[in-house]
Image (cartoon, rainbow, N blue to C red; front, side, top):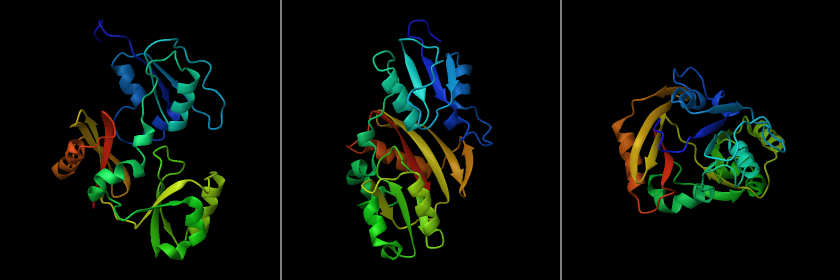
Length: 239
């Protein structure tokens, strides 16, 4: 690393990296950062904890956090004013309702409606057809989006109840779509600078090669007038 730039230290939540490790053949974020010579401290976020790991060895300086939204938020609050940047994320611009007005014509779930979770419950299963896709509007994901079916309706409701989903939480409701594969691209300064396949046939399958048609769609998002941020990720589904 060049000596004329500040040393960047990384604090990585293994709850996220180990869960997503799979059999990809690629290093985790912590391993990649360490391989590049950056100081790395791995910790385990404890859901519901009041404070981050007290053994984090980094003092004031250039420190980046990587992990779940909950972990990053907790660490950013605990080290506010001491770590720079700690984390950066304009979550208010990453919700479904924030970007849908600008790229709705190329959204996978372009037939969506937005409803409070309590209203989804009040209307009942039959109000949305034989099955429907449900996810939080907010990018912080109080729960992972999924397809609600009649056979699993009561079970899924119990799961969401245990997760403490608030009746006032705004949710995206849309028709389910069959997805063949999923790709993730990194957009920076209106250009697609990186990309990979990460899922095929509903299984984790990380590959460096991407389909040109998927990259072209990501570049279309990157060229739109409205941008979520200077740098962000764009997921593209292959139907």
